[in-house]
Image (cartoon, rainbow, N blue to C red; front, side, top):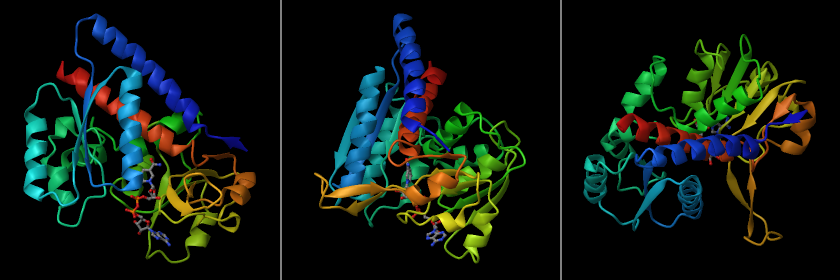
Length: 291
Ligand code: NAD
């Protein structure tokens, strides 16, 4: 069993980006500039955004963090996005999800200019991605592909089973793995909360992507020997023995599943680390296209 070390690969991606940004600056060009909007005080969202801002600093990017209370009116938020769309100094915009109930996620995503949509959630980017055209690929699926590529994991002809069909993880990775690309050409089964016989389906998988948000859901009896297992899940589970009062759990029961796998991602230190690296890659792209 080999661990797919997201921290290591993410660092390699970030080192390469830092070099490129240093070169951009020497040429007198602008460093990539990411604007992040954070609404409310959700603990996980705070952590994700802080980590994105910190990574921008490490790479020499500019970042702007805009905060709203969770009572913010939809119109105010959309107005802020429009201002960022019109600002030539901003190359990438992200609005941290989830959003408070009074705000339509669809409206927010559709308002972000497609060329600044570094999360890759805008229908224009999603549509292009489905057709295999150049587009911003959502950061988590993109991070998974970078990981598969780094470890030269053969995907061609393999049966990939995805658990979870969200627009940000499950559905896009199901499409990307099915495409005629070096990290694609899988036969894909997309499973969700209404899937019957999930265990039987998983037992046929050469590659499993667990992205359902249920801690330690995927157990050893659902995984065939030699499978590649990618754990996307990040859930805070109460743990009084930890300083913060919680532990981070993936969707895979790591201790029992890992010995059966050819490759597996840990949580933390797997897909999560790659997601930020992929976001930085998209932001660099947005900045250089503009210049
Ligand atoms: P989501 O809640 O939007 O979607 C969950 C999906 O899982 C749904 O499509 C649902 O049909 C499916 N599902 C739920 N219960 C199921 C079951 N019993 N059997 C089969 N399918 C089931 O979740 P999401 O936003 O895609 O996130 C999934 C997990 O990944 C969460 O833990 C989230 O925190 C994590 N996540 C991690 C990263 C990262 O960077 N590592 C990024 C995004 C999300």
